[in-house]
Length: 237
Image (spheres, rainbow, N blue to C red):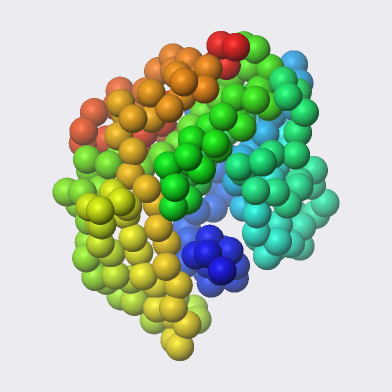
C-alpha cells in the first residue's frame, strides 16, 4: 500500500485541523477575484473532506469534487452533508473530456507519485477534462523556500496526544519527505519537488497556459522567498 493510501484519514485531519473553513473561504475569494464567474461545473481536484466545495458553492459556483480517500470523503459527508463528489485517482479522472469550466487544486495535492510519468499524467488529465478556455488554479509548495526553511524535527501537541514530525529532502528523487509518528502509528508523506520552470514545462506540454504566478493568497508576485507557488491560467487547447 502506498503512503497516500495509508495516511489520509482521521489522524491526517487531526494534524491539519488548522486548515479550516476560514482558510478555504479566503482561498475561494482569491480564485473568484482571479477567474470570475464560470458557466459550467468546477472541479476541486483532491478535495479532501470538501471544505472548499462548501465555500465554492457559497460563492456561486457549481463545484464537484474528487479524492482517492474514502475516509476523507466520508468525514466531509458527516460534517457538511451530501456533496457532489467522486472517489477517484487523479491519474484517471471520471469526467468527460472538455466537460469542466474550471479546476482548483489546493494544499500541495500534487507530486505524490514515484514516477515522473505518473505526475505528468495528472497534469494531462487536468487538461483533458477542462473545456478550451477553462480556468485553473494550482496551489503548490515553493521548492526554494522549503529547502531553506525545512524544520528537521518537531513535536506537536494535539487533543489525541503528542505527534513527532521528522522531515528530510531526498536528492535522489528530489522529494520532500515527512515521517509522522502518532503513538504506535507511523505514517509518511512524500511529495516530489518541482520548481516553477519544471511545472511550467509540464503544464505547457499538456496545453495549460499559465497567466500568473503568485506567492501567496494575498496576490503577491512569486519569488524564491514566497510561501507558496500558486498558478492561475487557462486551458489553451
